[in-house]
Amino acid sequence: GAVVSQHPSWVICKSGTSVKIECRSLDFQATTMFWYRQFPKQSLMLMATSNEGSKATYEQGVEKDKFLINHASLTLSTLTVTSAHPEDSSFYICSARDSGLDQPQHFGDGTRLSIL
Amino acid sequence: AQSVTQPDIHITVSEGASLELRCNYSYGATPYLFWYVQSPGQGLQLLLKYFSGDTLVQGIKGFEAEFKRSQSSFNLRKPSVHWSDAAEYFCAVVTMDSNYQLIWGAGTKLIIKP
Image 1 (cartoon, rainbow over the protein chains, first blue to last red):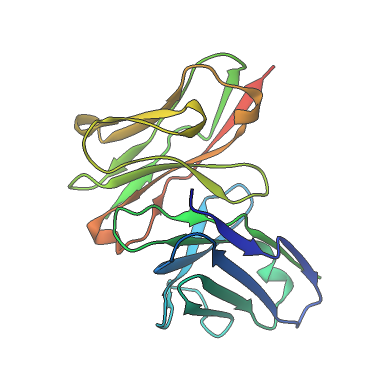
Image 2 (cartoon, each protein chain N blue to C red):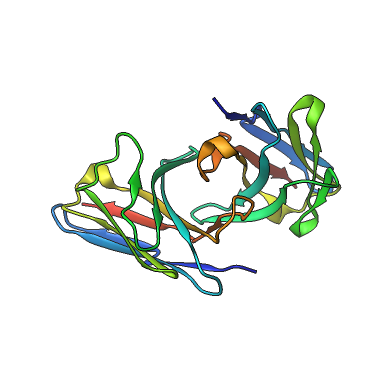
């Protein structure tokens, strides 16, 4: 089956630093990748949608300059949390989907980000 | 606007008992329907999906779901649960109007009693 690798799985860092999270589709080409944030005991909140080679489309209320998304190839997207602060601590999950409305999203295992 | 409702926040089931998790959607046409499972601290795994055709779909880990157009429902079932099924289950839809995005239910936490 389709595999999405997300890396790292856990990050702890100081306030003010930037953190990069990688999302790779290992055995298929991901035309579209999604980045989600999940708060404890809640469903996923879509942050942005990115198509390979284009700028990401951010959801309302998500700061573009804070959460930089790059989808440079059909198998890799990155999310960089810039100048992270404790309120950015969360569980971030990526997903990847091949072209076609009927293609399911395949999810990475998530990244637990803790900002001290 | 499209929406997905999972009416049960928690469900507790004895090991070996049958399970049904409810999911209803609001949309004028038939969406693409999905069930995902999330174990604690992990990403989501696709259990099954419905696009068209046979309304009873089989998924992984012994799960199945039935699409009922008249009830706008896509309930997930398993005849006999195992302790390893304890997790959070999310129902989601994709529609022509959602621009390829998944619209999520709030999730149902499944607790297994020994």
